[in-house]
Structure formats: C-alpha cells, structure tokens
Image (tube, rainbow, N blue to C red; front, top):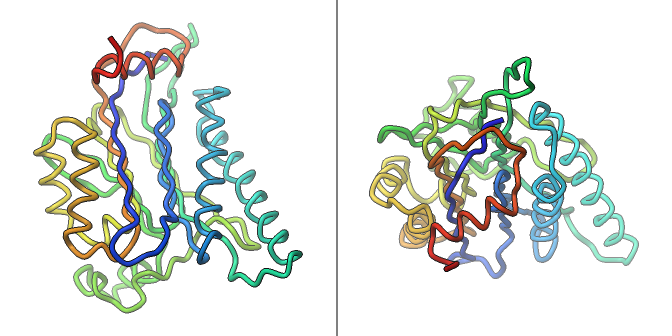
Length: 279
C-alpha cells in the first residue's frame, strides 16, 4: 500500500451546560476516532474511553490493511465486552446506573484491489455506530458520509419528518444503535477513494447538533490547518449555545509516498516536523 501522509487536528470541550466531558477521541495515524459516551456521570466517559483504547490498538499493533472492516468489527466486539464488564462491576458494587454506552465514528486507512505484487490502492474506510458523524470536504463541497442511527433519522427516512423538522424534534437525541448494553450493535461501513475526501471531519453531535452544515463548510473552507479547523468548529458550537460536549477531529491527506509497510511512529514524527513541533 502507498504510504499516505496526513495532517490532523483535534479539539474537545465540555460545553456550557454539562458537568463532565464524556467524549473521547483518537488521533493516531492511520486511525482516527470520535466517541460520544452516555450513561451519566463516569459511565459515559468510561465507555467512550474504552472504545478509543481498543481502536488505538490498531495503530499500536498494526492490522491487515486488506481486512480493515474485519479489524474494526473485532475491536468493537472487544470494546462491547469491556463495557459490559464495567457495567457488571458497577452493579456488583451496588452502584445504580442506567448503563454505560457510547457512539463511535472511525476513519481507517486500508488497501483495496491488491495487485500481484501485494500492493494496492489506499482508501478511507469509515465506520459509524450512533449519531456522531463523518463528513468529507472536497473541492469546497461538504457531504455527510455517515448516516445517523437515530429515531429522527428513521422518521426522515420514512418520510414522516423533513430534515428541517428533525433539527428541533424533541426526540432528536434518541439513538437507535450504540456500543454497550446487551445487544451488540453493528457498524455501518463506507469506503472512499482518497481523492474524493481531501479533508475528513469526525465529530460528536455536540458539534453537528449545534451548528449547521453551512457553518461547518465555511469553517473547513476557511481554515487551512486542520488544528485550526478543529478548534474553530468546537468554538462555533460553544458560541451557538454549547448544550453538549463538543469534539471535532479534522484529517487532511497531503501526499502519497513510495510503497512501504506503514510505520505509525515514523508517520507521527513526520507530522510533528511538518507542524513545527520538532526541529
């Protein structure tokens, strides 16, 4: 697989209403994650942190780039089991909780159509569970790639609500899939050529639920540095009311190198040099 050079930025904030930040994120090329926890004090941040820790293993230990979907699915099962164990431990200790849970959106570099020499074309493999979102920004145009796993999205799909009505619907925060609980929710997967997604945004609904797509597109188009873009998106969500934890991860593909095994440590060092963190 061609070595893919990326630059990324991330920002998160507790918001103006919540007491704790239950969002977690991961920026560990070639793996990027945003998870939005739920379940009240402690439970939500534990669940989202578990997802980030488990997906972080893909960056640390490596994975078969031709089996990206299977790698993500296996990790999500491991995260689900850990969240169940956490809940069981809480109940055994006599701590009454509504159960820990979390959404998850993932961007992973994978390989498709390997040739006879074993090399193939790099692609973005995107996965989502819940109502956190993945957008792509290409040639000035913003597209939502993921599909919300939420009650209002089902109503929109069924023609019972318009997209405009869904924005202010009283049950807009009710999600239909999440990690946690007794049933393992399956992720949806999307495969994108790198050229069709020069910039990716992964965000919790504390961003997408507070600012509209036009504002998101304006920020992504104005901020050349992904770090600035992530900061500005979270700031815009706070300016709009900050009713929830807000997290944004922005990823840019900036180049392709020669065919070589993916070295996540070298990739991070290269990125830090580009961004001026190292001499």
